[in-house]
Length: 86
Image 1 (cartoon, helix red, strand yellow):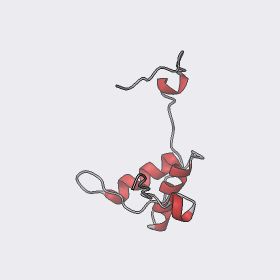
Image 2: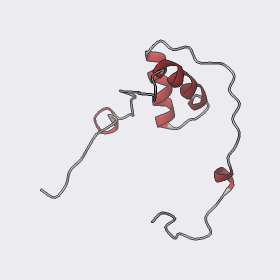
Image 3: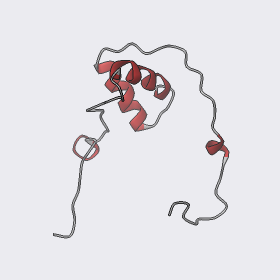
Image 4: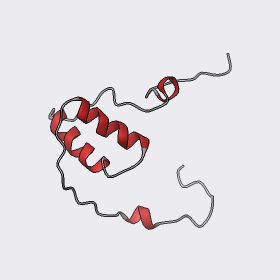
């Protein structure tokens, strides 16, 4: 055997990521997931959409207004193709 394929999110078998489990430190999973999903609702990324759908499937109501502050990382562009992580 020279290849192993793992399908952690359902992306390969179903063609889309799906939130299957969510755990928060010290409990409060529903409240944390509700807030995380509210932020991710503003994103078009497939993983963000999976988080939002997972929260809605659990019957969580998302807050309507969440302010996002752009981070410095969004403004940075690498000057080379060098690897940043060691």
